[in-house]
Image (tube, rainbow, N blue to C red; front, side, top):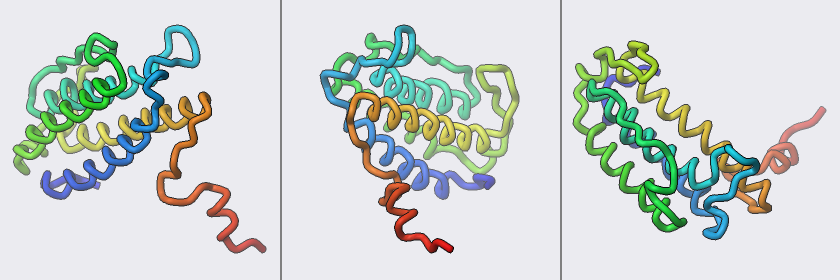
Length: 167
């Protein structure tokens, strides 16, 4: 799906972000820096990473600028409330940038941090895939600490199977 006008992309991305916030908001505040093994992203790292890459990598790149990704550590936001606020603040700043993109800017080639040229609209689409990937990690990590996360589309796999026709 090509993104020809940013007005068609922004509501879609807002829905993606709302689902991510619903999952991130379930992180127990006292487990914000929990990880399943030494050296792996913590729950807080994942949320900070989504915030920082959206603003300082994807938003900068679609403007034709190099990445300014600062990392994902607690020096960016420490504690549950600060982490969630950081996600919100970086999203607001990014959306201001995205709203200003013209159809011509969406078509132009930008350079990823890997040095790969890509159409700006494709880079925005990759941003969504990146977010969904990390949201899946949040779901998994929350389940590892016993936190039940809501089904993404309203039904669990068991409920879908129950409502399905079986031969």
